[in-house]
Length: 313
Image (cartoon, rainbow, N blue to C red):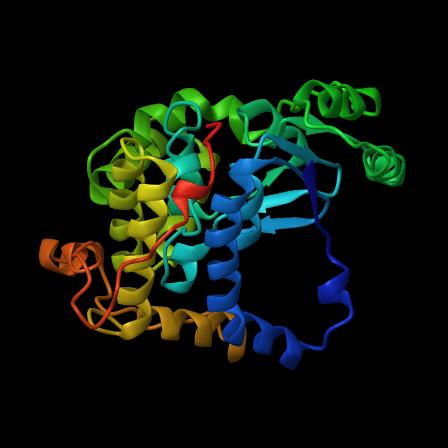
């Protein structure tokens, strides 16, 4: 058997602004718990995720580790968590760290978006189909009774399209991305971008710098450390670590940046967050390390049902 997941925009279109905030604030934990459990559970059968709209945060976390990920001309993928004082979670440090070169670091620190074609090109999606063909794909999949991945593959390929990113895509900047985002610290990454912008008059570098400077300095350092650790960890290990990081971020033990970021970007929408600390230089190693410590006796670690499935990634 297989599981069909679909990510679309209709739920947001049917909600007013206060309801959207209610969903963001009160269902955040539920969505993450669902992604944790579903990600693990889905290893026992094939998952087909149709990414027809915003694919971010927990939605991306549920979809990307699966075997079949169908992007469309309406797909928008991003991890803008650092811009609200948080960190890419729900398994993001696992799959972002495995993108070509240092593309994952770029996406996580800038919050930049990818479209469906770009998701195919960098490996985040496995198939591409026009939005107009989704009904045919779903109808076809709905008639399948199979445990064979090749049968699902054939069905998806039947309605798929061969696509390539256009010349304006960030993927054509991969050489510059690797040059700048391969450094060990966020400060060094920003310095490399500034040098590149000065030497080549590269507007793209200036835009990347601007996006990074909009984010929480603490979140930037936590995010970079998370992705660098994720490169050498399994998905289960990444999920468990990100859970600890999420509790630290929401508990305000180290900083109030998550609440401040939500206020500035989602509630008041003044887009003027007062980050604490306000600069990269003021973020200490101890503050970053505070997000990665094991939980105490009163806060049990995340338990994943790993014994119930056989991993295929």
